[in-house]
Image 1: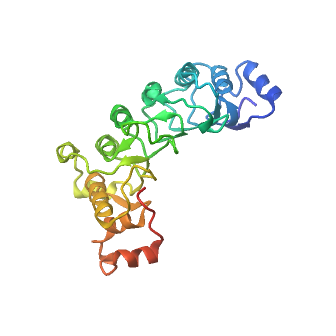
Image 2: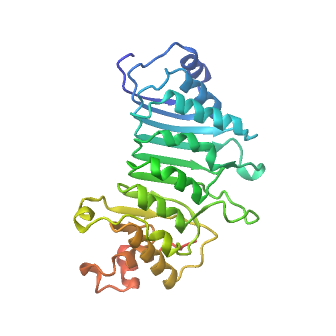
Image 3: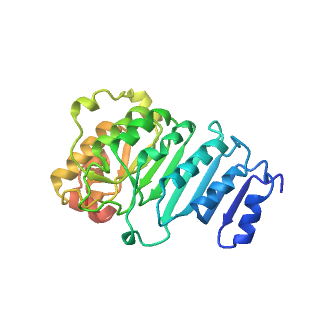
Length: 292
């Protein structure tokens, strides 16, 4: 199938998958690769069967991690991804890592900087990663955002990774949004999980480039989903209004949010919503999702 541009592979039939991995270079014109239900090591082997800097445009992978959680295995996968994908062509990268066993049965996590080499994919328009096993910090986005100026969709979901005994710095704060606002003007979907809802330092927000009114009209509408976190304060009017104020300051083109209370304060001064109360808005547009 030398002319095939897109392929979807599903694990579970070891013989077929091994044949693909051990065969000579196949699908030379492949641009979109979707693989699911395979182990991390199998996916690493599959990637290395492609030539260096193959011209992928979109990669979507659902992989199973080993119970031992060896860091070298993740590093080997990242190295294979970076070696066999062309940074000039890859625009969509979606990664899901799930566990072989329930995560409560064993305990291992990796620092988010195991992914540092992914900065080379400067043409990314979409980056999505879903995993319980990475400790996210604000520094991750500080390091990556300057390289990802073309990004339009960002989704980082760690699920219920953190335990109450772990230090709170191992997750995102509102401050993590600042590098996105500074370096990624084309973002229109942001999905993160926060543990701290305190407003960022105003001095840090002052350095963000402010688009002119004319430029704002050409920017994509932004939808923000900051997820759920047991570290967030209980839902209350003050928190929702403050979060909305920060979002509007960072993203002048923000239009919608995962939480109806926050979304109300984003829109409350729009002419079509000025007659609505927060309660009326929630009844009309959906239930309020608590900030926790």
